[in-house]
Image (cartoon, rainbow, N blue to C red; front, side, top):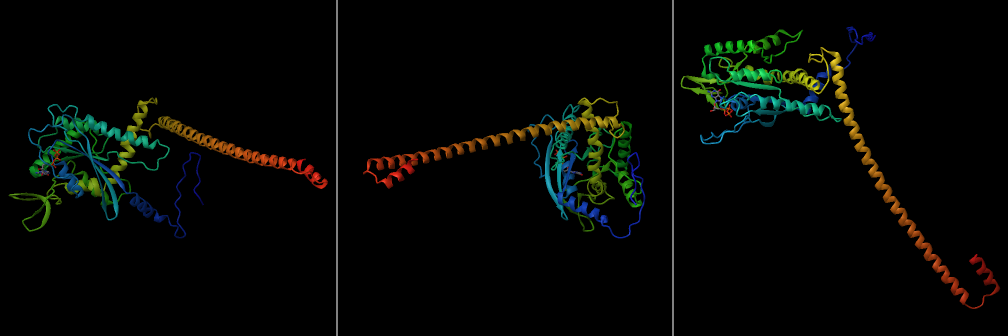
Length: 414
Ligand code: GTP
């Protein structure tokens, strides 16, 4: 029997054994096929002072020369005075799965004498991407929504070995509610293992002290031990101490590896003993890319949207979580719904006007056609009349008619 819905609208769960194969076990495959066909969109942002190896790391992560080699700027060159936002897009494919990857770079961050406002253009950029998503969601046709929201932000910390700088703290404090923050220690090959361990501890203490939220791999109930262990291992490496390299180098035992070569040996990018690159890649690409996308949509974007709607005049109490406050949720949905309705109305009006115009011009055309036909017929009749008059005249002016012809003529003229 089917589970009955009770008065609260929540169906009690009744576990049932199936009598035979139904087919919904194929759902994951259906979802899989559909997502593969549609492809994925992922946007990563990189932030950090110039020269910390941001472009090199992105190239290393996606194993593609996404960033072309850079010409060093001559010392006399004009450096920009503000933080710029630049993005590079690439369609990459692996085993038939298409990924539209966008990397948002923020050149200039932290490079000025006064960096107090370095975070501002970045927040604005992230919010304008939310705006564009909201606008698309409110369209009547929501078939082709392009997701340009930033799903992860790699924040590059200079390998100083001290603690976080004011600019790091300020940036993370301003951004942690808007984007999934993933802090990395840049160029970790310039520090010893011990220095890295100390530095990590100090960074984590700063982050905790300032109540900054760092993206954590989620763990769910009923998760298997292996998955939980993997998540814990990844979490244990935050902030990831990374090394990037565009080059393949040879190790002392003759292996060809991606890495950096030093007189004392080779640092291997893909070796977990040498740095946290592998764990970072797991976090960003191999294991948690979908979680990053989901968290961006379900939490970061949702909270921003609620705040935005509040500022648009939806009154309610302080909470920003829609789930916690159902009346706010209803109000918010009403505002969105009304916006959607008025948009629909405007569109319908436009379509209506267009249709009326079409009909009018069609009517006008057929009126002209009718008129032309009428004239044609009138002319034809006129011609016929003239011909008859002519005939009549000819007959009357001819010889006298026989009585038979006279009756014929009378009948004809009647
Ligand atoms: P901007 O474009 O100026 O912001 O620089 P960036 O942060 O993109 O740095 P980029 O990747 O251009 O690297 C700058 C320099 O650092 C290059 O010479 C790289 O070879 C070097 N580099 C990159 N990654 C690492 C690393 O992990 N360790 C070391 N030692 N050097 C690195």
